[in-house]
Image 1 (cartoon, rainbow, N blue to C red):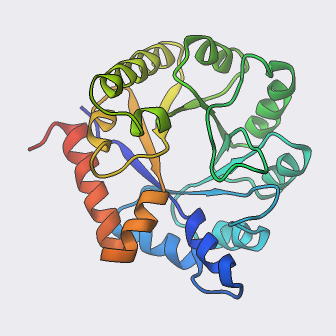
Image 2 (cartoon, one colour):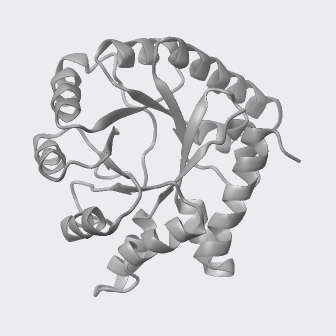
Length: 245
């Protein structure tokens, strides 16, 4: 079994900053602390309404980071232009609705192929590793491979909010989706709603290469500090993904 990478989403550091205005807490500082604590990459979502990450944050992250930046973005002309301009290591295309508190589900790649295909092509030509945030649904996985994505990130939100037999069934669906995606030549990531208590079964899936986690870690940092929260998550992922005790 191979070590699963941990991408830390710093959006909600910016959410706290924006609640009061000003410059504190600084998401770029949080990114540096995350890397020091064991993050393999940093994820940031530049939304249309700039509710957390702002354009200047993105510029500063690109200048400061020593690890890959994964830019979450909607497939809009504005976000495409920004991504092509800054050239992050990875671009994860997500569904986005202005009224939602957080991303509520996976992207409908199957239904949006004509619009998504040129976005994927342009980002790929720019050197970005393109990921599509999708449900672990066979049709969505097949469509993702068909339009040329390099990566799919499987939405774990449903799994995270279930328990017992229902959660086990959703984990099985994630496992089947990961197996199919890998068979189609896609790198498999996962994320949304993952915590200390539920991360291990997902991290243990053999096809998973990366987990992206944010809200839980920022919330846990209120109590323990960002470094210890990330260190504990890193340790739990490592134990699950490498089969170590």
